[in-house]
Length: 246
Image 1 (cartoon, rainbow, N blue to C red):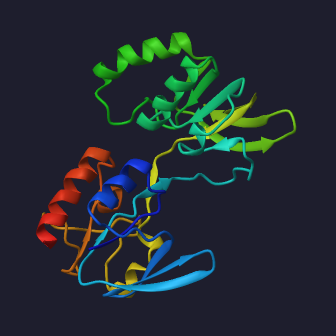
Image 2: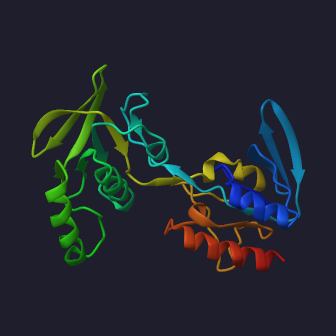
């Protein structure tokens, strides 16, 4: 079984792989046929042949347009590798955004949250959300719903953010901006067409209950196989795919 993944393998997983005599090949993998994968790393390329394959290429943070290419504009990955700013604007009031806001608030950062829709955590039962919203509105510098970020201007002193709501625009400055507007599956980054695997316009790969794609010997699990994008769901799907493949 050949697995492709965009993330860096952790030390714990490397140990498990060694114990099970799993060969780990590092690089960027793309399908070149239904039974071959090309892997490139550091200018070197190799082709790996397989009888069966499990695609576990995950997802990446979704982006919004018109943001500057600036190290102070963060996503949920780079937000974990940062010297703490004095103030932080979280764009996106969903689960990921509020998780990161909670962490930064606990570390003493002045946190503001902006959400495009009229409520935080869209889709959540409002009765369950209400106690959380009361708590964070007391703690955070600001929680804005029904508000759109129309522009971010990078200056030497900070990031100037244009916030639109109710037909009015306000500009506020922040030390950093965290973009947490969801995640996008990596289905269109792996050359799936070359293997005959169908990928949706959003980048998801459709699977059946055995985690098979439309190509019977190729499976897909995790974020790339559809919602919900949760780690324990991916683990269960991985077990299903491995047992079926075996």
